[in-house]
Length: 464
Image (cartoon, rainbow, N blue to C red; front, side, top):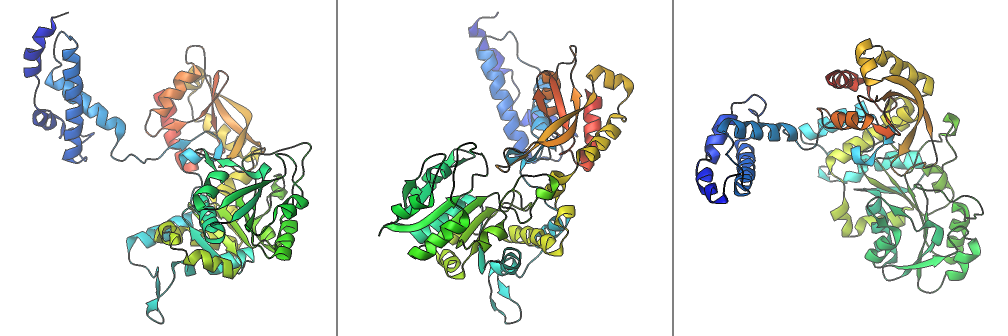
């Protein structure tokens, strides 16, 4: 190993940033990228090479090698950070992969809204300022039976806005069994504290009775809050107060009652084998004053937090200055209107990807998986240990946590081609393919593999 005293001469031999950029800018893999990005990558590569030389490396990398490193770095990152992924995990509402896929109509409406000016906040007939909520409020009223609605950027924001508007400086009564935590360690007590309201816990973790709420009500009470435990279940010796019972208590005491459904659904999925899950229209009909739910979970639309309920209370939320900081833009309006339109038209189960994937039967999925397996050459299938297996998918997105959806998957892995190695190579390919590891096998679940992804998946397996 050379002495570190030789490092200065080796450092002087390194090419400059511009010289490296000149070598790579005509490479077809990076030709479309902005020159500034090439320059930043070249600086990073040269800085790494300097560190290597200062640590005692025997010789500097050639200009050609440095250029190759720049191209490799930029090719790995791609032109855009947000990119397409093949979801073979079997998790339909995968939070890390963007949750609900938009319907073709929603994508069309979104593209149309993005391409030109819109009537987002103008009453064309009267040529006066309108409301962005007018494009979805009538639909939400008809679909839920509520008097009014408001849409913000996500459900946590909807809950926060309601608490701040109705109970700031007052107590909010919540069952101990409903003090949930959602993704990212975001907890109901924390939202309450930030809103300026004071948490008043009642009942126990597994059992809460109507009398617990009634006895806790006092002059400082501002709101009765019910939180649907959509991301976990407490079973066994349990008791909970129904929406209708809590709504009646609220009316008797002159207090507003709100229920956060989290992953709210507009349709009853029991006929497809799902367990009972309260729908938004059902909870509205129970008499609850406000109901909040997500747009990008079981509804199958864009990320949004939707609140429906009594017009007077919705008005208070809408007039809160915080609402401006939480409001939705024209793209969300366009995608949400199209999603809600599918429910009104009666074809949501066929046209909304989330509902279609959730309700597809195992036999149908197995046929698609078997057809795909036949596309692999016998030699490739043997080397990868590819075989069709029955397994189960998940709903995901903090919804229906106890539901296992029967599905079919392609199982990969052999002693010479271990599953973990295959998983890494598929994840780092283009496009990335994400499956799930189970014991010593890599499963590619066909419930969530889109028809448009089959060619890319076949190519990815061929490269293996």
